[in-house]
Image (cartoon, rainbow, N blue to C red):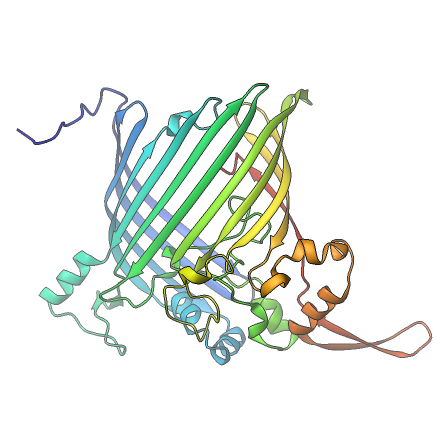
Length: 394
């Protein structure tokens, strides 16, 4: 009677129902502590051997956090209101998710195929309806509450598309593009901390530390000088955005069939992309806004090589990545690895100027002859990033 075919759910595998409870702790010493509690029900089934559907009709999440007072004051002085709000706010929300995957069963295999994963996450609409129905209280900002807590409303969509091409002698070329967007609305003017996009780390932009890239052309030097303790706390502060575009190109090849009991494989790769803010918050993230006519200038590029130790059941991975194009700078200065290649393993004018722009002050000491020597202390610039992981990045 239905206008479309209803698949026989058990034909290609037993459908699963999963009841899950999850606790996450995000902690950065001297900066933030944030906890998240999630309870969900998920249904999982295969339409065909290669097509998988995952439906989470209900996911209830409670998040809370605190921020160090000294770091809070500095962030306030630099208009980083979003970060303070997202980290320190207590949020209660419920949502639903849907994920569709094609060829997930062929990952980590040879052959030519395309993998696709699309996900949609919608939250807060039921709570918004109930809050209006029961006329729940509003907080001091005019946002409605539920059980005395703010709740978030948002829609978030993300795609992961990969093209695998295999060649003789266990060689493989993989291209991945992964865009995403999250839009707050209704009871929210910003995405909650857990729903934002981040870039950097072992699985996407490998030349940058986790969550330190972007947004857009934002330059951390805009934090300005501060004492060394406070500045050290802000060195690894998360950079986030409501829009993400990440791409990767990786060539994999075999080096040895037996290397201390494992297959040894190599990889050459290039990563490109960034995260961006959604057309606002320009005061707190100068250059971080997403603009089509600035997308190239605000795109980061990293290159590198790596080793994979394939033990059949799992893979140990070691990558060395280098910043090729860094969007926090302007014009030709963005091509840091080309323009400043001579400073890859030593300090020159570029690294010295970067430390001055990101200084925490001046330290004074005496040399071996008793003369007073001054030294600028601050964040240093690193062209190279080492990454270690278990499993392939994609």
